[in-house]
Each structure stands twice: as structure tokens, then as C-alpha cells.
Image 1: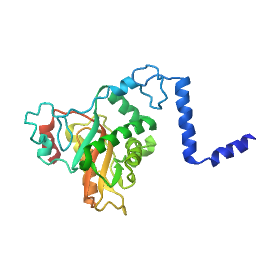
Image 2: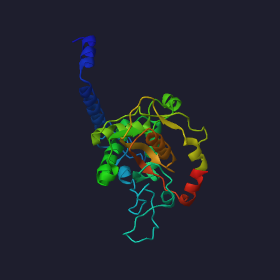
Image 3: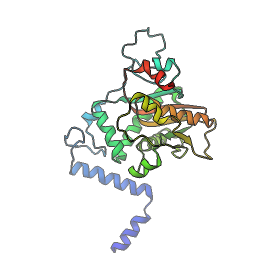
Length: 276
């Protein structure tokens, strides 16, 4: 068969079969031509397309059992009895608009480096790996995390154009498929870009996202329970701003879900900063 006919045959292959061929080829290549783990450098000898070794993946630390029942903030020094509800100072002040937030792991060590890879390199297998873990977390949380639609936290159009993809959507799309829920990346948009400053203070984080999100004209979120997905929850300001936009457009409720949760010792000041 000529090269032209071969190319035509490839074009006529169903998309699912083309993806299967690509994945199979990548898996075989990882066995016969192993690369190094992108975190520790050890050779990757398995057939996984995730460029991180099992040792590094296993080093990701889950949030502690003692955490805020609302936002998931670790509370290792919480001294109340096990029968009392654990609520962090920020959530005691009803700081957040979302009903609940949960994360797969703590933002530290090897996980922090994996998040950088996800954010600045289009590594879809890594996003899918995180999505599978988040799907398990949603099922474990039960009714409290039930939703009707999955929405990723959007990038501003300029950042999306510059980067070429949204790392939150790389997680949310396979997550929606795993949960058998519709994925609606176009329902929410960021109307104001993030400041150019690399490191933002606590107050700057809240100011930068206040009113920076909106639902798209004509989008339908009325009475929907939304599962809002992002890569990292730091102060909760972004999830809060997105939640307010969705609830203001008629959403029934919003629950947040992120790969990682940054710990903070500034919780007592958070509600005050947010209201200022």
C-alpha cells in the first residue's frame, strides 16, 4: 500500500482506536526505552505514561484525619473531643461561599514538583492519574460531594492563549468521565487576569480574585450542584470567588475539589482579610 493510502487509512481510523494505538505505543516505548522519573531521576521501568516513578507517587501525603469539616484545612492541633465538629477559624466566620472543599494530598515535597509539571507542561496522563484519585475521594465522601456537573476553575483568556491549555481542565475532564457526570468547561470564565506579581500576600490573593469570575452569557447553571475542580487550594480565595459567581447565577450549591491542599498557620486572620 502506498504512503498516501496508509495515511488515508490512519485518518479513517476511529478516534478511540487512534488514542489506543498512541497509548499502547507510549507504553511499549516506556518499557523498551525507559526514561528517568521527572522528580527523582530513577528509571521508569513500568508501562505507565505518567513520568513519575511509583516511589515518588507513593510519597504524596494525604491530608491528616483532623481537618476542617468545611474547607478541609488540616487541624493537627485540634483539641476538641472526637464527637465535636471540627471547624477552622475561617469557616467559623462563614468565610467561604462553597459548601465543602476536599483535596487528595498535601502541597509539599514531590507533590509540589508534580503540580508544577502539570501547570506548565501539558502532561495529560498525569492529569488523568490525579483524576482517578479524586474520583475515589468523591465516592468516599459520599452525599456531601454529590454533584450534577463538573466545572474546572478557568484561566483568563490571555493566560489560556499563552499556555495553550488549562491544567484544571486536564484534571476535571477525565474526572467527570470517571464520575459519569457532564463536563462543562465553558460555563465559567475569568474576566480579570491574575496580577503579574509572582508571589501574592494573603490580602492580595483575595483582592486579585474578588469579582474576577462570571458565568458566560446564556449558560445554564440554575439549580445545579456544581463540582468545582482546581489543582491547588491555597487560601481558598479562588474557589470562593468562582463559587460566588456560580451561586449568583442560580447554582444550587458548589463543592470544591483540588489535587493538593496547602497548609496555613494564618487562618485566624483569613476572615478579616477577606472582608477588608
